[in-house]
Length: 165
Image 1 (cartoon, rainbow, N blue to C red):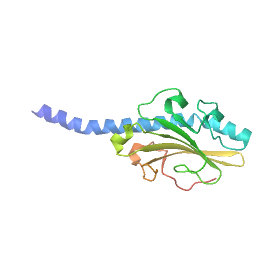
Image 2 (cartoon, one colour):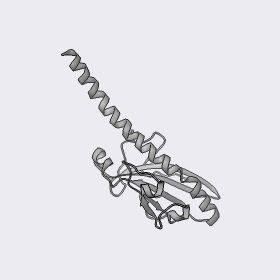
Image 3 (cartoon, helix red, strand yellow):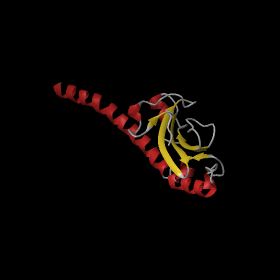
Image 4 (tube, rainbow, N blue to C red):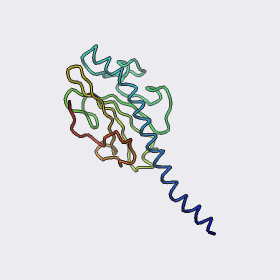
């Protein structure tokens, strides 16, 4: 009976910890995929003095500003369904001369865990040929709710806060 109690106690601690670890790993993975776009974004902006408006501008499949995760990154994901480019009017849009690319889940994997839609994004600011990048996250259909900090990588920001050069 003591063994059963010990096993039950260990399971009560281990299962939530594993769930949290899995969520953080998938959030971190999203930023790895987004970061792979940095050189393409900088190259495009350097040549055209503007941010891309379509994925084809970056040499990627898709003729519009959005596509499926598999279409854009070449592999499927159980956690992420769509990727979007945004140069104006998007969730947590960066100020000034900024640009945004974000991944969202409409497959309900995140919604089952957090109770809401989750967005992970890469913000870009440019000033006189210098670029700043940062990862951001939010939840809710309007991207107005902070995601629990234990669900995102430590070097990422919840929602939009002021930042500049």
